[in-house]
Length: 157
Image 1 (tube, one colour):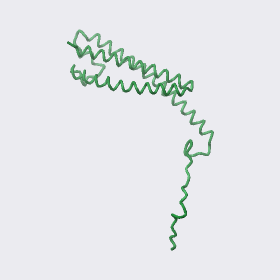
Image 2: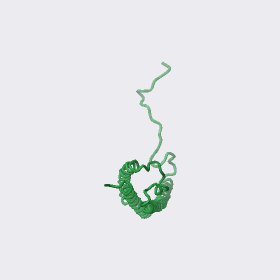
Image 3: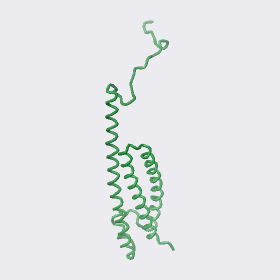
Image 4: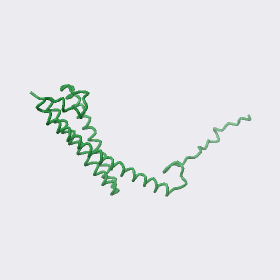
């Protein structure tokens, strides 16, 4: 017989592994941006999209397991207290490990975001210096549309 509490701990481990994978992708993203490697950055973004699909599946599985264990609505930080007594220590360790992995990911993702933003600001500055007369932005030149003479109306008639 399957133990839904044990299955939930296994799911938390899977989520933790995926969070670690996202952390690695964030570090790779930082390197790609610093090296001006757009192809590598594009590949990393594709991998992040694939990970988001995987997280959706894990989220559905988590919802089902939370319902079957009766833990729905309980915050992650106090989840271990609601496990069977024999599993509480294991649950506490698993949850703490997941929280640690997530904090590391948050830090890496913040650095990656800041690096991307800094480089985008640099690109904007370069583009602005290349064409100082453009008011609308790169490549955009607003112009008044010319109405064909056959469509003009003489209101004095």
